[in-house]
Amino acid sequence: MEAPQLISRQQALASGLSDKTLHRLCRTGKWQRLRAGHYLSAPGSGLGATGRHLLMTLATAESTSDSAVTSHCSAAVLHGMTTWGIPLDRVHLTRNRINGGRLSRRVVVHSARMEPDEITLVDDIRVTTPARTVLDIARSEGFEQSVALGDSALRQGLTTTAELREHLRRARRRPGCRRAALVLDFLDGRSANVGVSLSRILLHRAGLPAPEVQARVFSDDEICVGRVDFLFPDLGVIGEFDGSDHRRAAPPAARVVTAENVRADRLRALGWVVVRWTWGDLSAPAQLTDRLRAAIRTAAVHHRAGYWTPTPEP
Image (cartoon, rainbow, N blue to C red; front, side, top):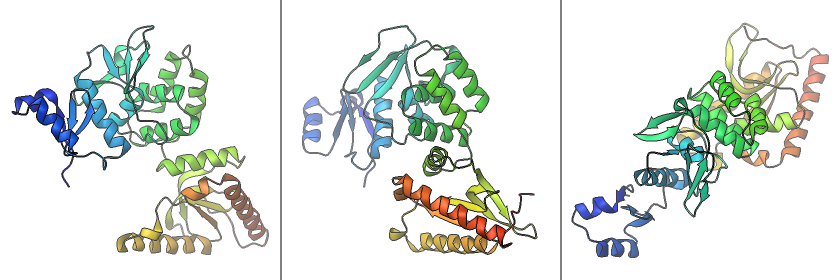
């Protein structure tokens, strides 16, 4: 299937098409009107929310003055950050002024002070820097969404903890600053994906000890058995988030599943109690917490019986 291409009205007219032809292409479903003056050259139903928002952002940037900077979730999409759970129905812009924000059906315009070093270029589009973007999201979106996005920014090396702390200092008198501070305190770039980020939040809210994230586990002879999502070294428990859908696994994916099962067996043979969970388990936090507490009790019994002794990472 042909990938949708973003085409402006000016480009279409320059290629010999007329407004009447553009109307007919959209009416018959061959093209799709993305916003005023911009079209997709093929149906965009397969783009997904992120892909569609990216094209919306590009189209908006073409028709926006340089005084408006792409920001918030739109900047996050341009930077390639995770936007899990964040509404992507409107393009977000920020103008460097105290007031004058507005909301329309397709665009949100924020008014806020921006320093020159908080603006960068992505594909020739003026956009807030990754650090400023993370702070804007942390001040305006939910805790889970902000942590998932912030973790992804750190994981990809788009920003650093020091940069985020500096931007938090700059935002200390802006709305949502305290909420952003809580987000920054919780970020961990070692989180491999959204599921791991959300799992960390669940473990924290359950009152469980903070685990080591993406920790290596070694055998008694100091051979690395593997890297695990969550390691509770003093409790004898390992936690693994499984975000795949094994019911639809193709043969290569099935081999990965088999390898994971073999690795889990090796970890259990070393005395670790391994708990695996999926997206479905994250929607039932009380049940997952009960499973983890049961695993901790089982590991404690093994430890008292001499079946298990923690093997620290060299």
